[in-house]
Image (cartoon, rainbow, N blue to C red):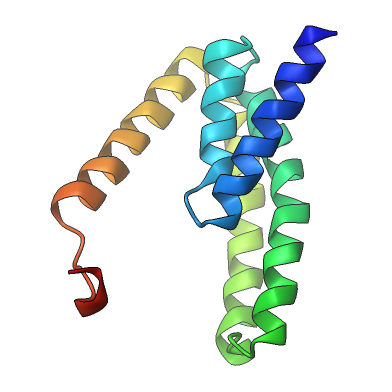
Length: 125
């Protein structure tokens, strides 16, 4: 029972971070693979399912606030979906250990880029 409570708590925390734009899905993947011992490909699938309701909620608020530029979104969504499907297929063919290393390297590059090379808006200063 405590495992289910910890899973629910992790989902809640990651959901709050997603709402704040931090990348709760990435945090959820790290928690599932590092703490729960879930296989990388399984964690990716769960992360995709986790993303659907959080993205739907964000989309509703962005539509309500008229923040969507549909002529940009539609082609990007179509092309992004095609490449995501292809990448998911490729991920099933890659060894899990290599996939974890690639994902860890990706997180390091993104973190370093955000830390050292991100241009700040004037209101961030």
